[in-house]
Every structure is written in structure tokens, then in C-alpha cells.
Length: 177
Image 1 (cartoon, helix red, strand yellow):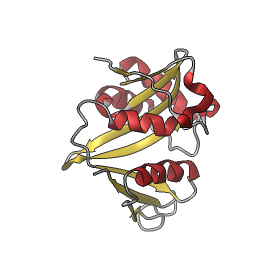
Image 2 (cartoon, rainbow, N blue to C red):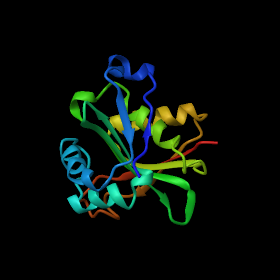
Image 3 (spheres, rainbow, N blue to C red):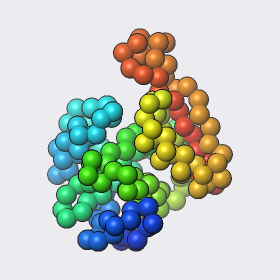
Image 4 (cartoon, one colour):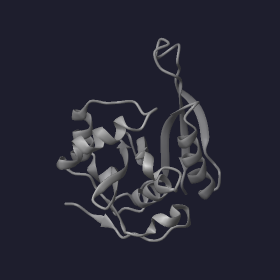
């Protein structure tokens, strides 16, 4: 089942309030479009298109698509941690270049957290590389909204875990309540 959250004007999205946004769960038909969106969003890591199909099907209840004029403008992939069902781990946030800098990622994240079925989420986690300023800004904004109680720790180290093939990933854990 595809669900949509009604568009509500938000000051961060500025002039993009018309025509209307559509926020919805992804589905099987969205996998390739999500793959192409992420390909256009460096520095995001590319996964296989099969991974994006799995996100759009198996994890659809914890992922969100933003569409405008029938075009995918943004995508957040996330999942509930198997051993901590109250934790939503945000895997990737992708916003098409044309829609960046307008607050779309934050509106998508809030819409996802407000989705029916995710009422038990009390913590958001994500990993971010040091240079990904857009992600730091997004999650610091979420942290500020919820009392600035978030903590940052090293999750996967560049040398110890990635063997110098990937930048260190820092875990940002943000309590929501």
C-alpha cells in the first residue's frame, strides 16, 4: 500500500510550496529511479540497483520519497534496528541537485518520523563522514529540535575498519524524547 503525507507549507522549503509535494513510501517501481537519484548525489555511496529495489520494497515503511511534478526530488532510506526497534537508522538522504538548499531533506525526515507505524521511534541514528556538511547540518537541526542531546562517536574508522579505502564514518545518535 502506498501512503502519502499531505504537503504542509514549511518555512524551510520557501518557494517550493507550489505545486504540491507528494511524500510517500517507495515501491517496486521506484528502485531504478532511486538508483539514478543517488548516482546524482555525491558524496553518497553507490549501492547496487538491487539494494535500492530492496529498500523500495522490503524497507518501504521506513523509507520516504519526495515527488514534485511526478519527478523524484528526494529519498531517505532508513530501517528500524533489529535489536533496538525504537531506533531508526537513517542510511542515506538524497536530494536532487535542483531541490538542494531549500530544506527538503528536513521536511522529508520530519514526515518520515511522523509516519503511522513509527510512533515507537525514540532515537535516530545515522553515520556521516567528516566532510559531508549537508548531512551534518540536517542532523544537527534534528538534534536541536529535540533538545540537543545527540552524541557523536566513531562508528567505522578509516584505518581500522576501511583499510584506508573509505573515510571514517561517525555515528550520530539523537534521542527524540
